[in-house]
Amino acid sequence: MTEPHHHHDPVEEYEREPVPPRALLGLKSYVGQFAGEHVAGTELMIGPLFLAAGVSAFDLIIGLLVGNLLAVLSWTLFTAPIATRVRLTLYYQLEKICGRQLVTLYNVANGVMFTFLAGAMITVSTTALGVWFRFPMPGFGDLMPNSTGWVVAVLLTGALFSFVAAYGYKLVAAFANMAVPWMVAMFIAFGIIGLRELGLTSPGDFWLLAQTLIWKGGDPMPGQAKFTFWHVMFFAWFCNMAWHIGMADLSLFRYARKSWYGLASAAGMYIGHFMAWIAASILYALQLHQEPSNTAVLPGPLAYRACGVAGLLCVVIAGWTTANPTLYRAGLAFQSLVPSSSRFRVTLLTGLVASVTAVFPLVTMKLLDFVALWGMILMPMGAVIFVDFWLLERFGLRRNYAEATGATFNWAAGLAWLLTMAVCTALVQFARVQIYFVSLPGWFVAAILYVALSKVRQKQS
Amino acid sequence: MKRIAETLSWLALGVTLAAACLFFADRLDLRQAQAWILGGTVLWFVATPFWMEHKAK
Image (tube, rainbow over all chains, first blue to last red; front, side, top):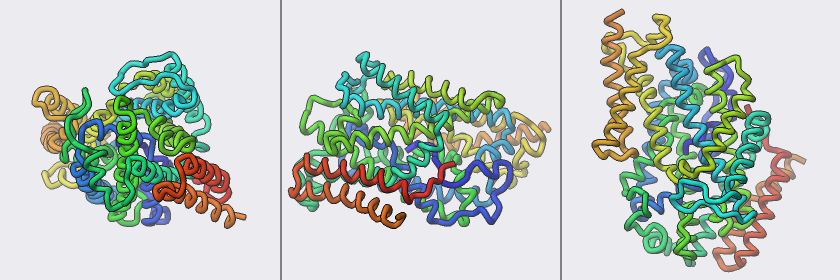
């Protein structure tokens, strides 16, 4: 999902210059990277939440197949072509267009979202501790903590994760790389054991079981939006929107020899956002089948039911290895506000805030909405980069305006960003467009606004 | 040494997946399958650091 990259490649090199030909990477490293990055703690929540949204088997399977394909095409046709032409990081590319101050604002927005996501990961890992120590954990839809044990466990987990992200980030990042093949195997095991426990004895009967016992369709659980094919498709397409259409992966693909390496994202999509979501969904269906009154979406107990202690380890490791780079990136984003501040202290402080948010299971229980919101907030800047690169000169306008003029805040880009968010928010609040869909019209709004505002801005100067 | 460790790692993944499949085929009960999966997990994390490259940023 929205896990930030714990890159295998040296992304912190060539920060303010194009990647030279000798540093380019082959297809294989992209396949490995994507396969590793999209099996994360978040998958354990997203699968069950689809089920809670009353999705049917056909809508889920076909929606995921199509939505993930659109995500792969977005990386291949939007992100990679620009990345392999300019070979710059997202931040440097944005700085050339928007100016340093606006990039800082973008960084802070990103940092806030990373902090909440890290909080969700701390929540996920803590659910495994709840199985060991048997303290009451939040039920489905709970937005407030419901026991002292939960609060203490979350804060301790959060403190540990934050400390490690601040002081031992590299060690956990190396551990994360090592854990990936095992986590993929564990998700497959979750699915196989879950299906057998649900009564499947022959793979040929899967579809019947899927329709009648797993994704039965019907009404969603209280407080959840009903998910149709379109919801699933748009969710799968946009859940990494900040990275593909939002262009965050310019930093990743600037090393790619060819732009079609964007297709390597299929490895991540169809392992992490197809197989893993389906497996996690099956675990929740099993719980509802065995204990119909237990609607709690808690990855710890879900994984324990199928795979025992190894399942619990998987939850803790999946949560931790996602929280680690997330906290690290959030720390870097906030540190950019005051470059002289200590990254360690900023990361620790960010981790503390994330831990406090993790006590309240709000983001975790509303993870589908949160992920869609994240895409909506960062998408307009992707539209700005796309338009700036491909279209602005065709309209007789100057590309990379901030670089050309020395501006520190290109208000054409800044206003395009803010107004797009305002339009999207209005569409959600007043026109009843659901958050999962709003980023599609939002992209066109951002693109048109940026062209129009650039025309005004550049005419003035 | 590295080659032995790598072989053990892939064996560990094989054990994890095979345990799930044998449970599916009613050759293992759930407790047995979970024990084998835990064994595969331990073996993976013991053997893998000996050969997998430590390429963190």
